[in-house]
Image (cartoon, rainbow, N blue to C red):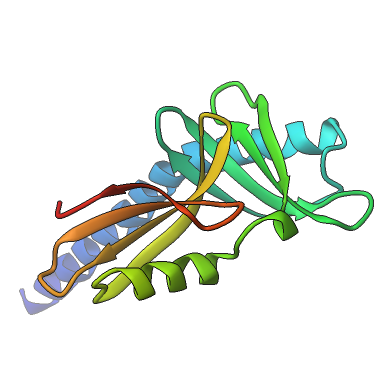
Length: 159
């Protein structure tokens, strides 16, 4: 009887582990598919020679922000619409502020307890940094900073 209990426990543990792995795999599959399509579109159109990393951004529409280098070895950021893989805009990394600089601007100007994330977005053909952070009262805030100069575009406070 004790052997059956051990066997049943190990079987259920293995089953739970397997189900968890399958669920995570299925959840990541759409992101991987859209990233692969965006990468193929960018490389096929010779926009970039090498893709370094990709991020997803969901604003008014969903798009993929692709970081890489072009044929002249300049670092670029390309915004690709997620559904159609249409290239919306290309900007040079040197023409804007860095992620670190965007976080620093927020920490200097706001009452920030913890910066959660900073990601590049695009709205009305303007690239921006979306910085999410918590204040000392644990309220969630979003700040939108212009990519080119770091000026404030919009704030969403105390969520």
